[in-house]
Image (cartoon, rainbow, N blue to C red; front, top):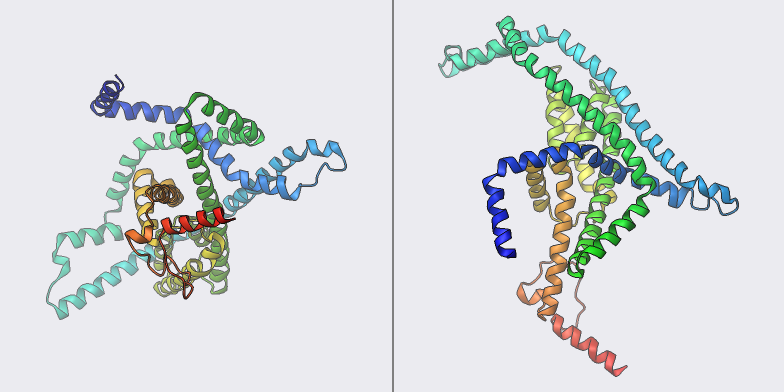
Length: 413
């Protein structure tokens, strides 16, 4: 009966897959504020624990009434500090961004003239040395026309024709997002204030209504995911913040344009492992390229040096062995996570994959131990996988032999 029920549900799912995903999206839209609240509470749990367990550790030992304000004070300071930093960055970034956009708009005629001049020089060079006139090709001519704005009226007309119908939906989406995040902040306060009670209730319910073979692995998976994701996200935020500050200092010293705007972009995209620095370098490099090509080249050199410092010195110091997977698997997890869930998937793909990798590795070790087989008996480890030097004069025995040796020592004792 279970097999028939499972088969029926599976067939129903694939036959009505579009309707199932529509229902799933509707459910996600309804519970979006709760999900946002969970994310905010999870991230703010770390500064909250820092205040509650360390800064205010001894509060209330002498005066009992102070113990009652320990939790509210920790919550208040956590939210004030984090959202204060966000508000400062936004309030500083918006004028800088507005100034940058105004400067770009004012310099559009100069940029058009530079592009046209460069295009003419390239066409003349190719015509003199190769004999081909690129202006005879309609695609190249249309591209230059579009960039330099010879058909500006038609371009603006098409832009507004396509833009106006989607403007309302864009504004509605922004309003919905602000509503979800605002409600999520309120929900996160309640979650953090009563997290111990909620976790206890959830564990009691799971243990009461599920068999042991289900809830034990579930708790194990939860612990590994919390350990990997929490440490990775917090470490990556600290690492990206330091990189953003260092980028701002360096750009200010070398007198690059838009140092604050570029530093914020580099710091935000640095949160994405592996591809983040590349993605952040594209818009910032293009921004400087249209101002001064040599400045853009100098910025790319500076960014390469900064990312080498981050990848080889700063990142390992902060993150340590948090990830525990090779660069190949980091790249795969970022690609797969980004393809499935966009930017959040690119950020969370690495710690989630690291958690899966850890669980699979531990499960394989347990199964091999039950089969009394050593991993070295199946395939010898490489030196980088097992860097500890072997002691001279000691034989390398299998796992079975080591277990027998320990058992014999215990019997002799």
